[in-house]
Image (cartoon, rainbow, N blue to C red; front, side, top):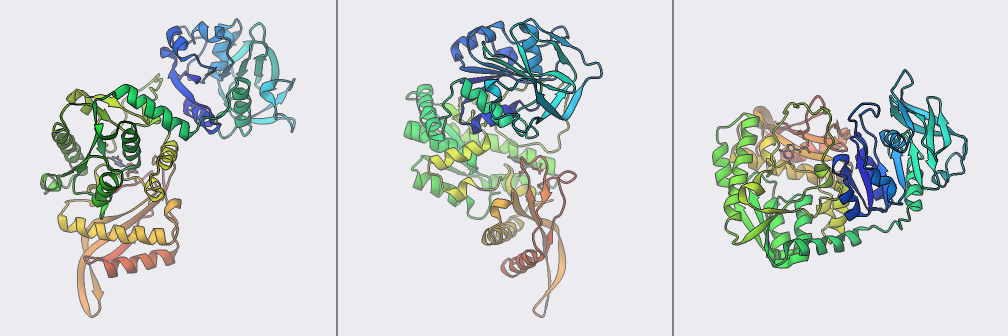
Length: 513
Ligand code: XMP
């Protein structure tokens, strides 16, 4: 393992990403948790100290334990990690006095003969990304300078004999183009073979699930999404029919979605599955409800009740499986942490395990989203399933602004299916982050054949995004939009007008509610 000690930088996760790309297994732990005992158990083969917002000269600012430097393994300090390393090892850090550096900078070598710098400085200097107010004013005994930048005389220093390396800039970010090479050199120095693959992860995860669960029973809430599906298939591979899946069908799923999920898990994978068809319950509770937040809360609460009811029928279950991912797990090192505004209350099943007295099984908690997809492929889940667009927990409810009726849901399902079919046929599905139809709460007048129509209008939505936090509308060609509108109006009874939503996020959100 490579241990990343997190001091709270915004970009610590990127260090992990870069290392995973190099097929090196690493774990991020907040500095408070890295005790001597943890270091002994983990026995990391190398350690990286991350950046962070604190100031080393401040009393009480975070420090790594001394043991980090006494384990005989390579250590790399980045930004705050570099400064704290110097301080701990006998150097000095000075508070910012107008020598701050933010953004792009260039470092030039004073001595490029350092194993960490192989492949660096071939062009004389390297572009790096800096973000620091304080700076190292005295390097620790044993250290030498290898590169400088205009505002950081100690941009790269090292104690080569002890394999301690310290860089003032951030090699993990995109704006340090040679950063990957530097990290690659570091893991090579540490002796990593770069053989951490999904096949290895699968075997290891199966072993761990068996260890944890023994001969006891596990319940898994299946949503039809990628994360819970991959978790279910993996756990089933580990413990077979000790696993039961509960699929809560709230009646707000897309066309044929429930059949697909049931078909795939029950019939194809032979995983014991309870199809909790509670659409009547959910749609009943939503009758007459038009407020988006009330809708979300109603669905969220019912979902938990229903899940609990079905889970209670599985006698002797002691574990709840969840498709928690790494970004949800990393305990963030928060120095400020004020309340943030609720834009939309997200629906999740947090709090369930305590309420039901269940222990958690979370076999994906070390993976990033794209790694979950890779594991899904490794487990043989079909490609079209793995590459599916995200689908929100409250389902079609938030794509049907205003009051929900069965009639509107039926129309929406059909229109959405035509739209997605169009996108697939034009080979655009994988370019788009998320696409769907929203049925609008207005009816408009149209003419079809010789007759007047008075039907619903709908809006097409398609966005590009990386993480759903910001998004831009997808620039379809007018031909595509025209053809799709014609198809929807011809094939879906109940819609006579199609619009395209060209709002970005912000100021819009991706979903309509
Ligand atoms: P918004 O509409 O907030 O959506 O821009 C951002 C992303 O989150 C999804 N979304 C949800 N996912 N439960 C979920 O699991 C929810 O309650 C929920 N609300 C929005 C949305 O589909 C988009 O991908």
